[in-house]
Image 1 (cartoon, rainbow over the protein chains, first blue to last red):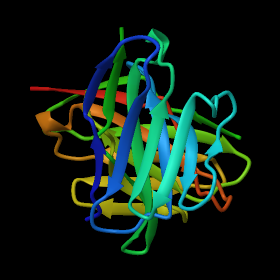
Image 2 (cartoon, rainbow over the protein chains, first blue to last red):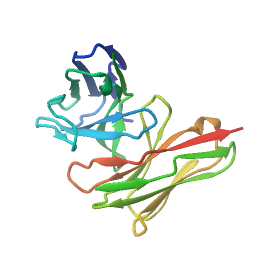
Image 3 (cartoon, each protein chain N blue to C red):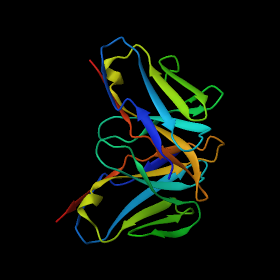
Image 4 (cartoon, each protein chain N blue to C red):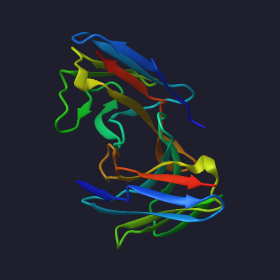
Length: 117
Length: 111
């Protein structure tokens, strides 16, 4: 099956610093990747859709200058949380859109738990 | 936009059958997914329905009625490891193919 990796799995940083999270498709090419944020005991909230070679499409209410997305290749998308603050502490999950056995679905990375002190 | 409703919590007994319902209102429908998510982990794909009817996959089955905006996930022969959150997600019919997730149903399987 399709494998998506994320790095790092956990990160703790000081308020005001920037954090980069990588999302890789390991055995397939992903034209489209999605970035989600999940707060404890809540569902996944889509932040943005990342398309290879073009600008990301952000959901309403998500600041594009704060959450920088770069999808420079067919196997890598990055999310940079700039000037992180404690309220940005969350579980960030990426997924890659993939066609598998005739189903247009998405496979998720293992997630990155960000804690901002 | 999408609006998705599913029960917050359910409890069932090991070996039993449980049905998790999901209702949705959508401006454009292009498929419904069920995912399983264990605490602290990312979701894993369980099933996909785009046409009305029942899709069976081992112990898990998923049903869709597009006219009623309704789906259910049926879990048979429950095992303790099935304790998890089950997310219903509806995909819209734009080219982006993005999905909106329900808040999830936390299933607890008891011995």
